[in-house]
Amino acid sequence: MNFVGNEYYKLNRRLLMLVGLWPYEHSIYKYCQMIFCNVIVMYMTVSQVRVYSTYNLISSLCHLFDFALTCCGNNGIRYLMDHVEKDWNMLKDKKELEIIESYTYVGSMCTLSFTILGYVATITIFISSLIPSILDIIAPLNTSRPRQFLFPGEYFIDQQKFFYAILLQTNISLGLIVTTLVGTESLYVTYVQHACGMFRIAR
Image 1: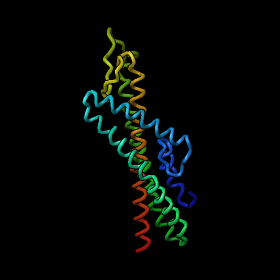
Image 2: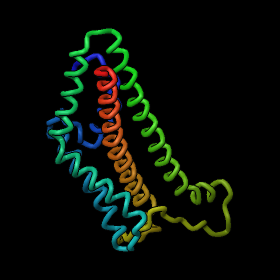
Image 3: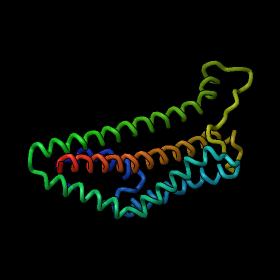
Image 4: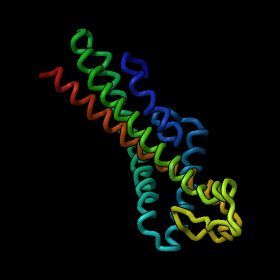
């Protein structure tokens, strides 16, 4: 990808590369990432099915569904990105470039906003799970405060003994889910914004 507006798509590219969904990447590393992401999230999904945690199960299933759709439609995503590049390279008039740039900027700001909201929520969930442990250090009681998972599941091991390992796995899964959803959905927003910009130029 080599065009003037490339900088507006940098965050989309980084997010999708993190989960192995960037269509221009074809290394073995990409496929290892895809397998790793799916195995981690599937493990979380299976653990939630075991305890019938329907509400929490939805986020995992959304990730798997979105991931599968993006994998299947990888060529389509690449085609659209190639079309975006072609459109940018075709525009020579300064006013037309300003129009497409303003629309693309809105798309990039949406991507940034989704990313910040998604990761702030993930970090908040992670910290809230650690509050009992932190309070046990700061203001200890005679007995330890009960530690609970925000995403209950059956992990086939002693959950209190391996609390931190399960918490780490759960939060990695949550981070992957957020990255996948934000990366894919925000890319669609940037495509829509690009199309709106092109229609504005054509008008």
